[in-house]
Length: 306
Image (tube, rainbow, N blue to C red; front, side, top):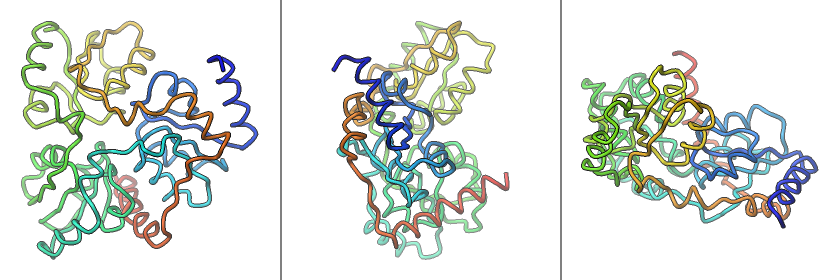
């Protein structure tokens, strides 16, 4: 099919099946364009739960579609590319976490949303990159096992010296690969540009930033800022929205390595196939789902108090 014909077919199938297409900010341009909503992973899952659709086509990676299913068990949640995973999420398992909890019986477990349903089920509370600080502050225990991202954990630990954060040896392979010399070089090329980075970056990269925040926080900061030039330290898929929403501003990607292969797997054709063949369905054991939902619900309570 030609591109426009494919888009028309997706729209027809979407209407026929009372479906919604949601896409993460890191998806390819075509997928972001066809989506009904584009955003961060948890915001998309929350949107799906709060709206009356029978089918959710989640254009992201596996843990994101799982989060949507955790919050919307009655809906059919489809992941267009079933092998679109997350290396960082794979760096922690429920069994490994259980063993770590045995070593620190008095510690609370804070689980970054970039993790499997099984891991969420073994955690006390979830967090996102935007609310991690408030979540950690809300916990009574001094000792906190933070999984799986050691870089986000380190960033938060600097702001809560009263807590003893036990880091997991996990990281985002995309953000973690940024090199100091790359940042120095691009700052030298564009000395008048503001540096915006994601806290999944290594500490030495975060320390060189003018602003540190989640994908949405970076997008919002750039939109509100009076500055006209920005160096972006997160997955390059976000450049599409930044440029689209701010045509009068200039954006430079911090490193050519800022691309997540898993996030780029979804295409217009895989979205079409997902709707046409109702694949690939996300299923979660009900006991695991309920435990994982408790961790997500506790996070929501902290956000509501804020």
